[in-house]
Amino acid sequence: MADIVALDRPSATLAAFRADVLAGLGARPRAIPARWFYDRRGSELFEAITRLPEYYPTRTETALLAERAGEVAAIVGPGRAVIEFGSGSSAKTPHLLAAIAPAAYVPIDISGDFLRQSADALAGRFPGLPILPVEADFLKAMPMPAAVAGLPRLGFFPGSTIGNLGAAPAVDLLRRMADALGEGAMLLIGMDRVKAPEILIPAYDDAAGVTAAFNFNLLHRINRELDGDIPVAAFRHRALWNDWAARMEMHLVAADDVAFTVAGRSFEIAAGETIHTENSHKYGPRGARLLLAAGGWTPLREWVDGEGLFALLLAEARPPASAP
Image 1 (cartoon, rainbow, N blue to C red):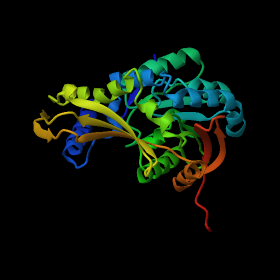
Image 2: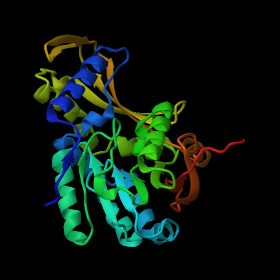
Image 3: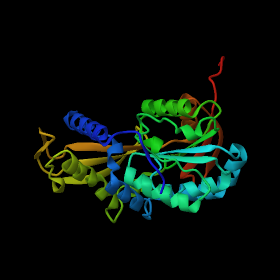
């Protein structure tokens, strides 16, 4: 069994969850950061989402990685420590690890139970590979295990998770990744492409209602962990395409006027008002490269599936140029 380094104490995580929820419910418009979807149940529901017929990103990215892993390996070279941010089930990771002959693998995820399960599965598949899981919120801090000190590094950020952030926080995260991985490190990142709403909306509002359950689970988690009494049945799941912002949005919409308490504080939400729970920004090719460059990464290669749905980009952390 892989030993997990827990960066955040459970009490600190709970305090951060409480602070974000109370601030988000009290704000106008109301919004709660999407990272709090991922308790164990939330992680399980997201993995179920990735297997839905409507949800194209996971199968498209996985196929693209399987097809292009050899080309990635030719550029990256062997002997790197692979650092995966938000590793989840690490379902795509074996394609990369098998191709590049890494020196170590460091999965970082906020859900400790899920992290342990996926790390143990990979340890069985790659018995000679040091696997060093870290339980942490990589949006806050990303220290590297001492065992990878001095090793060249490859950051792995699949799933278009970068799309959950707006432009400014996305650039900030990319800069922190560059600082954590070090000059000369590389980053393999997945970015979802802008496409027709007829493809996008069903991916976030599937016929089986799994994505709705994923959204509602946030309310269940608040009730369970923050002594809430939110009437979950009074809310509806809504997914919409915001063309102006080039993003999919998920909301929880109050079907009726509701009143509830969370952590001893009272809230009232009027019928039709929403709690904004997730953004998923989509990028064109130029926008994706510009975002990477703004974050301190020089794009090296880009691979796109045949339908133009999804892109994998490989970039290198380089010092800023001294002239335009």
